[in-house]
Image (cartoon, protein in one colour):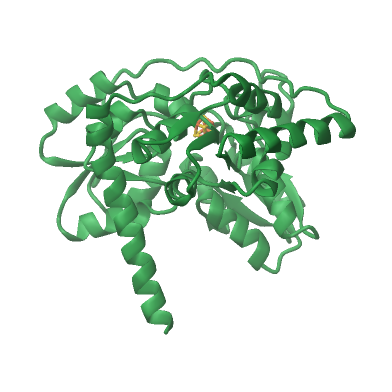
Length: 360
Ligand code: SF4
């Protein structure tokens, strides 16, 4: 299907991703929570391990990651932190591709994940073999894949990008006259195309959480909260992003809450991020953007990622106690996948250097 002159949606039949029901967080009293956190801190120390958590995981887990010397971040920062930290074991609280990326970049380290069933609808929509065949059929394209992909898909890519760095990398490639095969998130790809003017062939994947945000309902919410700034993650549909004051990565959205003068924010991304936003700007009011109002599912549930919610303090303790859920990536595949990830990290480092030089 042709969508506009410089953008095409690939005619690929992707697997249907069925999200399981949202797991309920274990009920803990404050005392139980404190005891469990102390136990995990002790396990981390004794095993020379560090906890690296994504912004979308449960608040108690994020807090523990920071209190114990680990980090809470987006997937790029999680990978970078794991590389730079001297710990021999990384406990990655997030979804599976994040554990794989950590292993790819830290082959000598043990990487554990609280739950190996924690996947991602974007990763699921882009199986390695199907994707490799598709790339082979389009040899004239530079293959740029989002971080939310398996090691096999990364191994087939020229570049890996996160939402925070997708625009400068694609702009850089477009300036060199390269055409982009983008996978797997079609909404993010469409946003990147719109912002860079690149010639883009889009894989038709999507995030089940961000795709549920609904433009008409958001427009109505804006009318009811005229003073609120609207923050939208670019995995959301284009008509939702069109209503935003800021479209950006998780890190950019957190910065916006800190820096914009608005008192209220309507936020279109996974609700777990509210924890970090509230820490950084406790006086600000955060409202979840509205989702499709079907199926009688509560708003809070629809803005939670079921796979991120599989990460709990109890499971972090369990994997440290029994060493289960270790991530393995075949060395040959890891070596190939490392190339496009390293390219992104080098590009990011170069960008930081240029920014610092400009500021001097
Ligand atoms: S929120 Fe969406 S993109 Fe993020 S892990 Fe969940 S399904 Fe994947």
